[in-house]
Image (cartoon, rainbow, N blue to C red):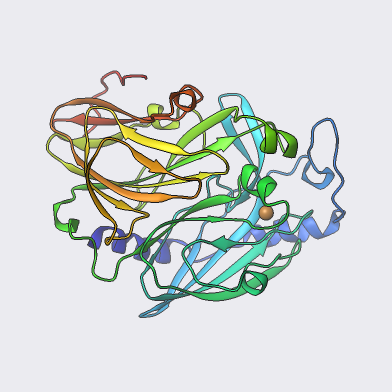
Length: 349
Ligand SMILES: [Cu+2]
């Protein structure tokens, strides 16, 4: 159970200063705040040529059961495929946004700093009980909003911007995962050797609400988010988890915190060459299932899945909805004798 606990202290110590976004925010104030849509490229005028550098997540534990979390809404270029850059609406300059890890029973004091000069943004955490009309409200361009709510349910949950039209804000990149660690841990904590966070998301035509609503995704992608320093951390870029495979050692029990953040599609999460010994649906230890081949994740749904890798080789991670695997939702878990990358070919799927 201690593994993700360590991560929280790592991020607390690694995110002390945050000056870059002040500068960007001041620059943003000088730009026109009224959103103007360009019908050809769909890029809001103030977003043109705007590429705000990623902002480190700010997280600080201020009490035994209380954390302060600060995130930014910003505009940052994200490569979807090699050479295809998406001017994404992001949280902290990542899409999906950074993973947040808190403890069951924590009060979260959440601050959203909106450094997008053009449009309001907000934050909806699926992990909390809140009054949406008060706690998930819009934060205007170049303004900051702070909200408090308890995270009393353990699990793997989606977060996303909830500003209208919600579909545009999610599909343009404002989504991510929050893990609430169970008070008493998972019954299998002591058996787990490695853990990863994998997120599935979709990309559509740039900022095209009609395509978001009526179209099919151009790409469906797996990304990994780091639980500790040195872990693989990627954006939703096709091939990211094939180019940078996740690594394990023969005999390891692997745990994946998986979350399908959509916005629209279901995930049929599957790891080729193994079965899930243990699945905690939505990441709640109470929702225990055994021996599943594939885990069904509704849009926003999460799970903790655990499996043991018995042989050396590369294990494709897919959604078994294979039209989506073809559109990019494939990753690789490479299993070697010592858990180091041996440079062997990764199997595509
Ligand atoms: Cu937004």
